[in-house]
Length: 103
Image 1 (cartoon, rainbow, N blue to C red):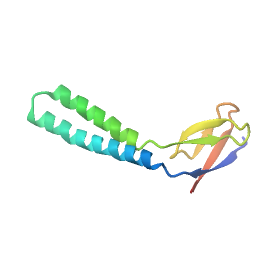
Image 2 (tube, rainbow, N blue to C red):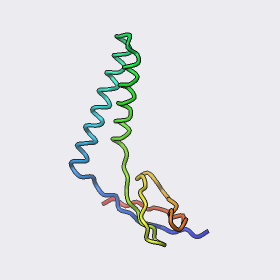
Image 3 (cartoon, rainbow, N blue to C red):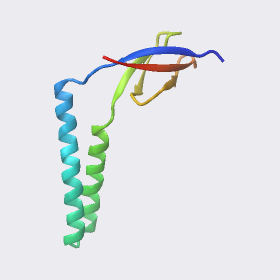
């Protein structure tokens, strides 16, 4: 099977994106401590589970990094996570290795 190589540069996020990530992390950490204290100090465990769930989702969203890559064979674009080492093009079904370079 033929294997293509795609070189993609990792771009630094904008200052607004960094502020949003920091805000999501702070909301998540505060929510985790708040949820644990709600569960420990009050009888309202349902509210504590909801607060913990929202905080875990906020922390997860803070660490999601996506990038656009282009297939070298058919030039179609795909959105991949920056931890991805390879992807399969949806248009031509070609496996492609991603080599990440820092900006």
